[in-house]
Length: 202
Image (cartoon, rainbow, N blue to C red):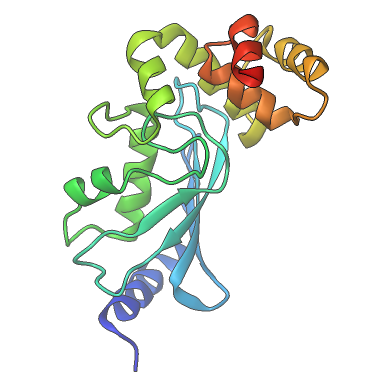
């Protein structure tokens, strides 16, 4: 017999037919994974006029048995540079989800909220210390880094000069490091090649 969470998810899918909404540049989509109503795959596009514009972000969503009294857990499968998301695991801040959750929130509204948080990060709910520090203290570098990650991983089309060349330079210093590893180190060191090299060998 389906539990309360499964019943709620099924009802929402019946009402919105998979929640696929395509309008302008801010589409959302959600679907069931392997017939498991507690395991969903979502997609959101990056909002216009943000570093995430033009990107398509895939989400792994796990619905707990306590849903709708507790929010789903979310992990970005598409790498993203954002204070509320771990740059290592893609996990979205559970504290932010828990503190902002309302029982009446639909999954559609939940995806729209994630889209809003992409454009307006919550600095009191930092999930990644280095990203959060850059967001608070070096906003210009944060914008550049977020745009670069959107291009590299989410299919964005921003122009971000210099980043690829520095990644290549760092990889030449250490041929065992892959492209993502070099990108991550440089991102955390505010694209300072010398500091990134020191961090890599330190």
